[in-house]
Length: 132
Image (cartoon, rainbow, N blue to C red; front, side, top):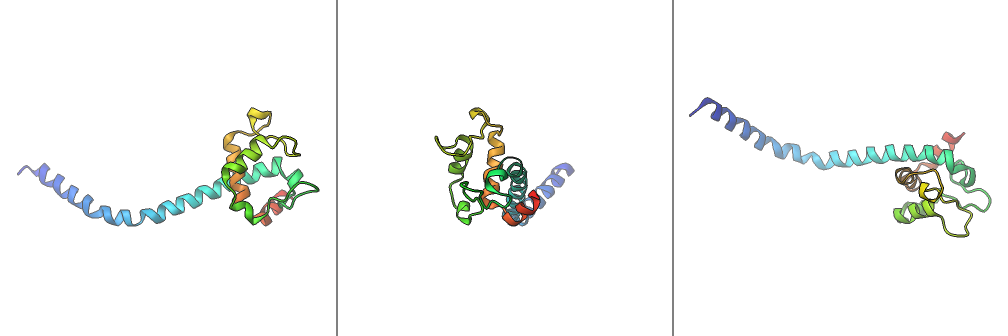
């Protein structure tokens, strides 16, 4: 047999044998990657919250005056699409402003998504410290 064919077969067998070991760690790697992505998204959302939302909803999401608190743990269970629509479009006749750029606001889809993730998964005590 040709020497290159033998070397290729050996390399193929090594790769086939190593694949299950690599695949075993894939689930934990993906979980860690998702956690890292969420952390980055929440951090970006915190900056958006500080810039645009804390005046009405408070430094730590406690609510100001008639504006509702956002530091309610139940908001973590609310459908993300509903929160997105509430922030982007706002209900007609409510005190909430429409923040989406298509509605005359200043936020893009991506920024509103970051804000939604922040509202759902934020450490509100940390947000309050960050705002000061």
